[in-house]
Image (cartoon, rainbow, N blue to C red):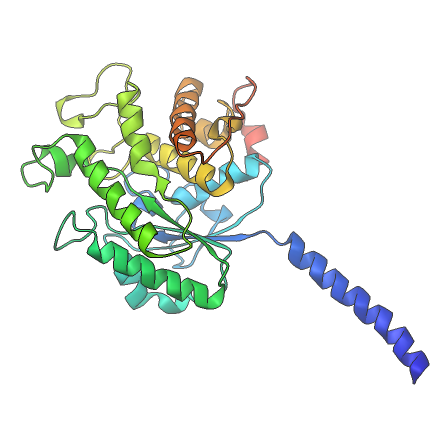
Length: 314
């Protein structure tokens, strides 16, 4: 019997060691929870590279998660990316209708956001966001107490600022961005252990102040400037979603978005020029650096994106 144990024990030890090594090598899982601002309504990003991520609703969405996956792959990072999205809702809807899906596994990381106006019935009020972030964190932590949770402060809406029906009508575009960011700061502070807020809206404002993006699409887009909104002046354009993804990439990985280079593959495939890619990367880096969320590591100038090279990043 002792001889048998001596034979079996090394085999069992080797098996356990192999399992441990496999677990250590497994790509971290990252779940995105959101609405049309996550699935990239109104742009070419909506169904972009959908095969590289897992849409838990089976709707074939690529969106922001697919852009993040593309950036991470180009950076030599391996993430198993998932998304759970529904248009026009906040986190309260996901808690009421998708708790079983969201709580189906222990996620390593989660990036989530609520409604663009914070509360459908009371625009600008942070209470609903603060409460639902707390409850969502509790749900996620029941499966993995160590899950890294980030809330993403979304961009200001031109239709809410420059149209008379908008809640922020008559105020500068910075006002909505500031109110949204303040609400996410409250949500982050009210739920201990959350990672720093992902500053997407702040990056949009920074792009406008830097002269890269136009601040008011209703009076025309100034020559040489980008329109970060799509045709409805509500959702983002491809440029806006690209900037969103760069900020999320830097926030989650700690990498300098400029390290992707001006020949970054997704920018190339989505029709951005090298100059536009470099400018958006610079804005994203400056926003992250202002919060000490990314260390400077710009890419060396390289060749333009090319379909053969970019295909390897899929």
